[in-house]
Length: 566
Image 1 (spheres, rainbow, N blue to C red):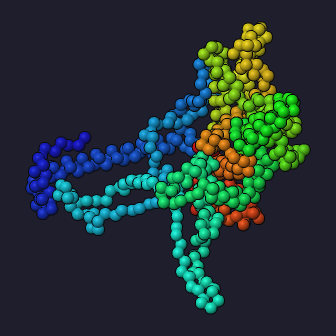
Image 2 (image 1 turned 60 degrees about the horizontal axis):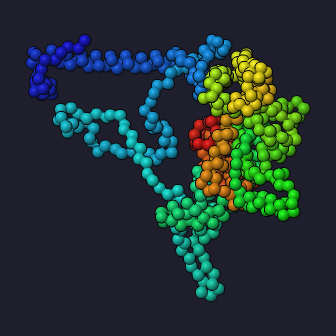
């Protein structure tokens, strides 16, 4: 315990003066001893706090990339349930994970990876001088303070390059000064759109859903005139340069995919809509039936999992998912020894209507099955409670398998042991109610119960075949990209515009899914488009990522399995 110092502030000033002049009196030694003791207590406290931090850090060891903490809390699933079953009853083991401490919600300094760093120094000679406030102690160096200054700026900048020229009076030859190498590379002549401009334009239009007309309006106010028609021309020419990369990405993904998730959502192409209307009117004029005319226009999203990384592909047109898949599978050349491609989708019949179904392991989305029960939870809480408890445990088991980094075969066996009895319980409930005619076909409960029975083999593929995902959520999330585009632009005008949009969205989504910043990636591909046309394999996102990591370190956000929607 530190001693109490019974001395006034004026007495301390006098003591400091005597210390500086080396003229201590008898009572000063007791005060100095008490001051030193207080300093010792403070330093001991600092050392004890540091030892405690080191002990806590040693208790949280990283094993195979996972944190193994000394304080265990049960994993919490996002799946809602009215009656959860303890892990001991389901046979699942609760993993030990460190309890997450609630933070302040602000980004740390490490999150600003692209910030420009400006260092502000103290006035020369300030350190070591007397404090201007108290005039007693000398100033010493203290920890650095960092303040992030976020500034607004236009998306696109402009440079005016002025070239000095001379002209021969006899023959009229004009000689112009030359710009530094690479200063005027891009699309255009009198107005040159730099490769970085093209990449930013593609990302802002097809990912951020910023219409060309809105970009034109915004930048006119910033003194950088942009014509919306010229912006489309820039994107169209950039698409021609990136076409070899997209074709290689599409071919690589279907040839090397081990898992495929596919789904549809509505879209609109004005030219196709007019064509459909003309077909309907022509049939009406001749008195023919119009029931076989396909009136739907879909945007199809596909997520293909390969050993190199995930690939997202988008297709817009008068098709459904099964037809798109047939077109892709024409390029897949499986060998007799190669495993069958796993396909997961919702249970719409059109998604299973294709020629290559025998080559695939067909699975249905369990998330869709659970949502059918959730839709009727107010009218049928008991059945919803059973489905919620079962699916909560099943998805918790899947999370546990991911945390343990189980191989596809081990994950399948883990689910077979822990999740199969749960799914059997859900099926037994559905069979009992349907067999005993406790539910009428016009009841709201009929659809979820019959869905479980009709799709049982597809819903339970995850514990029968290695590597089958539980749901199609990743591709569902990715479809927000074309949906967001249509919400801002309302439609594509032509099929060509839709094809360009599909290719750009595919490249952007795939780059993001592989931890690659899309503007930097597309800029690099456009700047090196001649090499790209000859060697597109060298420009696939995972190749670009590894090359950048080897040369300059991380260039984008970490790889995420949550999808590319953002």
